[in-house]
Image (cartoon, helix red, strand yellow):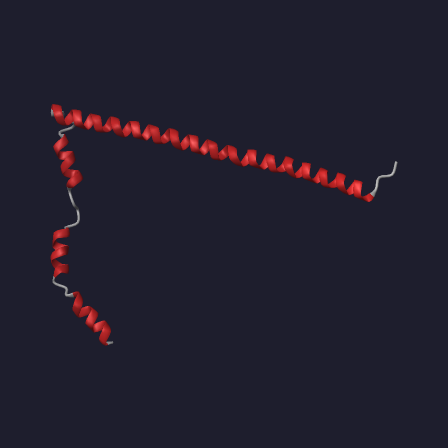
Length: 111
């Protein structure tokens, strides 16, 4: 039984299609699994961080309401440290207010 060239070519094409489909499916399975694992890990840590943040806030509010001190530091001192500005912006604004920007623009246009 001798096959024609067309029949053998068709069989080879089918074999190549099957091989490509097998490798294509394997590549998709392998590449999709790590992405799903990363997404699951990201969601779990986000939830944990949110719960920790809520617990810290609840503890802060409780300490503020009951005037609880920890090593001599109360809620008011914590709020003061949060509001504290280490850089004196008022002095910087006063220095920059003396600069006239229109003069600088005029000098650039004249050059």
